[in-house]
Length: 236
Image 1: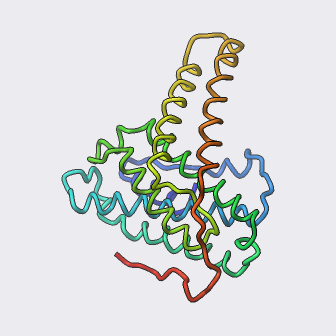
Image 2: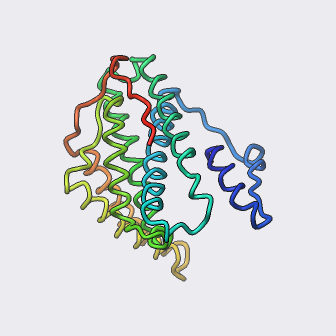
């Protein structure tokens, strides 16, 4: 969990005499080595999509204060800008290492990480629509806005991005939601493990097919390693 998110949650929970203690993760969790470029791609996307999620919520609540379910949201903007600055830092790291951005492999990996992050967010959010509806947002509209804005920002640095503004991309996401719902239903059924696993096979195959189809959609060629085009800091 992002350390800023950790502090934000603890600040809110402190009013209820509660706190998160995630220290045990460093002792119990196994670690996996990733090449630096993969960490750069993933962290950059995580920070930028986090920024667009949080700033969108902040702007919505500022315009519609009746949905501010907790006072801390009045001070949400600084956290949003922290996410944005973190993303800019990783953008600078990648621009300083142009070999991470200027070959055909970088284009394939860029699209892979974009798809992974966008689909994960969309599927997860569609399972918890109560939160977004509780603050007056339509979950799918919110997610598509975040995906489109994140993709436009990412196109300034990644050599290729997904064509998320193509209506077919949204249709594929919605089909994945339907398939994922079936997968969850199988997991929650009373069937024995063997039967569950057999039922999962065609569902997982259908989900993999949609993911592959989304990945193979014609991409948008983008990106720049020219420092003159470095994204300026925007303060809202």
